[in-house]
Image 1 (cartoon, one colour):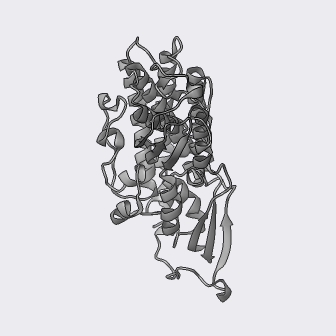
Image 2 (cartoon, one colour):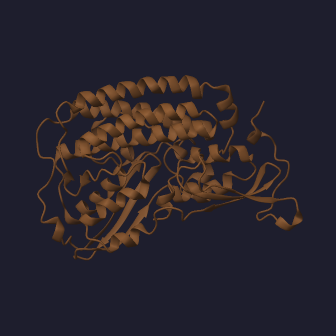
Length: 387
């Protein structure tokens, strides 16, 4: 038996349904809805319980990051960039630092590169755990959310020990990182990884082998191959469509070329498949974290020598740097003019495309009960849109 969203459409809705006809009704989904990965609202026009039109609304969160950053010194921006993607601030820290390093020609010590990868992969895993719980909750399995958020908290404990903060770390700075690992930290990371791995096998049984989850998610929100480049779809949403693209492999940065991992791909490209790709990438991150701990050098500097960052005139230049975050390519375009301030910065996050263009297209024709599940399957962060 197909899910509600797989059944043939009862009608072919117009691009903008006429509300005066009496056939359509407008309802609001959000901005405070458990199916939304942040404060964002969907304006839904429905016919019965089927979505005929969808329009994304943002503006409920932090806004105007790019202009704020142009009015602050380089070092003052680190508390700002963290807020652009709250569940995974480390990627913003890294890209902001990497852009400055490229323009200023700063060489990052090897130890700092390993520490950055450790921080980024722990961040990826924590973000995926939060996403996995939200995805399960959107389909009615709220117990799984409690499991995954608990183990995410264990990773936040590691962040607190590693960086001094649980959420906004400000650990990756131009030239390296702020500190080495505390004594005994590697053993504590391995213990947490063991617990996460055990959790993932339980989740596979409870979620991915669950008949109801399969019934509701398989066939929901299918992304066709011709949409990938046309819409700029990246990350797991892209890899679930069969595209073997991952910046950590295609254009390696830091020390990713010294780690053993393969790009995870599937072909069905529906909500279930996107979840399965992310699930496999969580196992992959556990493996990569263990490799980093095993290969990381014991000694060496964790930070390059820099001028006084409180009065730092970064040379004039222009660059675009990118990295693979949990949702795909994340990029920073930066222009400097030799002063203490940025001249221009533009942040390219996957959420704008996935939460607006793609969501509005895929929502048409699905049941309103599946809207939350579809939205979470695209994995978006609203502040990234409001930057």
